[in-house]
Every structure is written in structure tokens, then in C-alpha cells.
Length: 291
Image 1 (cartoon, rainbow, N blue to C red):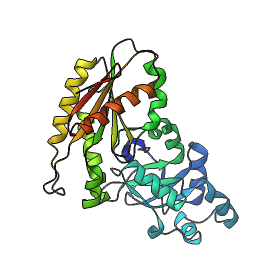
Image 2 (tube, rainbow, N blue to C red):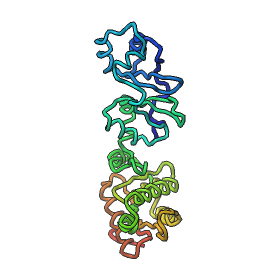
Image 3 (cartoon, rainbow, N blue to C red):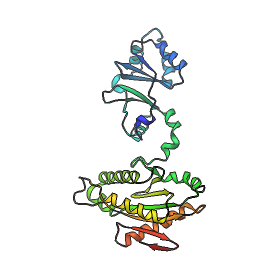
């Protein structure tokens, strides 16, 4: 998720040569928590609700905004902004680091294009909470939502547990930054090779879980093989001479069955695939493991 997906695109703005009264009028007229002061389409500074008591105490109603910014020690260099195409989680990190509730959003030319506020984030919090910040697929907490949804599904549902082979060796040899890139690549490959209605979840570490709807074991085996072969095609210049592969375990979900038990079955099948030599698909079927 990018900043542009969460920001408000029409922030309230004022200019340096506007008067202080205009600030109070803006807060009175609009349901906002901040006003951005601009200069030639670029954000100069930001005034938030918590600045208003200080402005009242200064008693500078007859002065221009530029003057009060000087008194408040707010200059252009102290303004924190974020690029609109940055990861939302990078922006959230900035807000946490600098203890700010509003973040002006700019384009490549540093022109103001939006505002990111805690209030807007809160409105989208459920969606954000269930996204893995590294791979941008759903995270493990998302399973809490799926349990109820799965209990109402009448068609076949298959679980595919997918684990990167020899991932520790990749991290040890090339470093965790490259390891993170491998995880990101895998997340994209999985997402682009399943139906849009299917779920892709980073279950933990280098493990991913795919939940495929209207998919029996026969179709799941085909899907698993397609995913396995797609992962084999991943090319990364940073991984000289190293081939990325995955081991996949499959289990079938039955209505009202415990989701964690089905995941455990897929996990057991995945570990069997590891034992059989890795880079393969194994199916869990009535206490049997079939490759």
C-alpha cells in the first residue's frame, strides 16, 4: 500500500501572506486537524490544532502567517514531508519517529499533492492492520477474519503451505536485505498466479499460505505445480548462481473444520516435500502424504 492510497488529496492550504484570522476561519469551516502553508505550490510549513493555543497566547491576530511562523520557530527546513509513491509503512515510520499526526505529501517536484493524517489512517486501519509491510500480501492476523468466512463456503477450498528452500543459506550468504527482496519477489509471484478472489498470506518468516477457493485437491495439485514452476523462473542479479525454489504442502478444507488443523496438515505435507528433496508438491490426504 502506497501513501497515495491513504492520503487525502485535497488538503486545506493558506499562503504566507494570508492573515492569522484565516487560520482560525479554516479550522472553523472545515473538519480538519491541520492547515498547510504553501509557497508557489510547495508546502512551506504546517499548522495543527495543537498550535492554536500558542497562537492565541501570542496575540498576533493583526500579523501575517509568515510572521507567526517565525515566532513559533517553524521554518521550511523543519517541515517533514513524504513522497506520494512511498510505502505507507515508511510514512507511518516517519510519523512515529517524529511524533507527528499530520504529514504533507509531495510529488517528485516537491509540490503539495495531499495530506496524511492519523484520522484518515484510522478510517482504513482494518485494511492496513492485515497487510504484511514487507511483501504487501496479507499477514497471519488476517486468518482471524477468514475463519468465519470459510465456515460459510460451500465449495471446495484448498490450503497450500509454501516454504522457500534453503532460505537461511540465502540470508547467510547474501544478507538479510537480499533475503527481504526474495520474500518480496515471492509475494508478487504468488499473488499474480492465483485468482483475484484467492488469499495470499505471509504466514511467518519464509512461509506463505495460499487459500484457493473452488479448488479441489486435483486442481490444487495443478496450482501448486504452476506456482512452483513460476518461482523457479525468478531471476535476481543479486543471487549469482542461486536458484530460488519452494516446497509446497496441500490440504483440503472441509466446512466447519478447524482452520489451524487444516494449516497443520498442509504444513506436514510441506515438510514431507522437504524430506523428499525439496522443490516439489506434496498432498495431505486422510493421514497419508502423497507427492
